[in-house]
Image 1: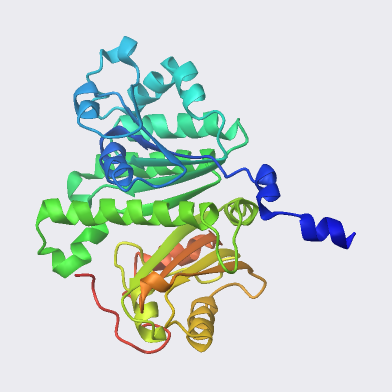
Image 2: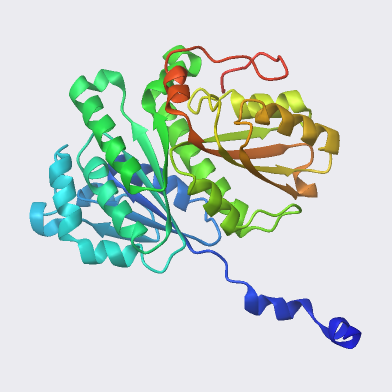
Length: 348
């Protein structure tokens, strides 16, 4: 027996390793804009697919694969803000879409809500993906209130449909961009902040299960948290310092994400840190972030150490099964102080 163990080479394990296949789909104009930033990050093991009914806009998008939807219906001229037309375009190209989401373990669907393509197509695509038994995560971006009540109401209805079609949906709101420097922010740069935030969070979640960690989190762990369903959100922080106050501020201070998740029943928390992040600091951060969770929360956490990171610390926290009342509170109240009492600063 010992002879067998001694002769066992770690390379023999590779035959048992099948990395999860992850696809990220950008649907519609906003989704494709965000996807372009994600594609340029060249994330290992992640395939990007751009989908739009507007061929002209799609031509300027960068992705591994680009597909025009509903060309037989609207000749590649877009959906004109009509989600019913968007849905029809998706159904018209059912075979193409089913092929796009086939042979994959996890599908991210990124779409802006309120228009025609993102609102109408994304729930249809999500349903096709779920029928393959893939894990399906929606990322929905809501429009500004100034874009009008009709567009805003269309977005809310589209969001409901997307939530019914995905395992969970991460909801973001362009309205929160106004909280960055009190709205005194160049428009192009402001939209870039939102796009980079989505790209960063999707990349971080993908890397949690595609890169090995000291305390490892595998794809089955991620599936367990996402399949808890309900309302979900991602908190992300990138701190230049390793002290707990700095780390927590980086996680909780982003006005685009918010920090309300009281009573959540399922959480995946992953920390990537350099050599200066001590065990005590790690415990203090975990304790603070756990404070508002349900008493019987299913908490899965992982840790990756990387000496090249120096003093910096990155935290990604996927929270699901959040009570609806807590999300309503987030829209009505001001952001609280961090668990360590430090004032929360707006992002630069």
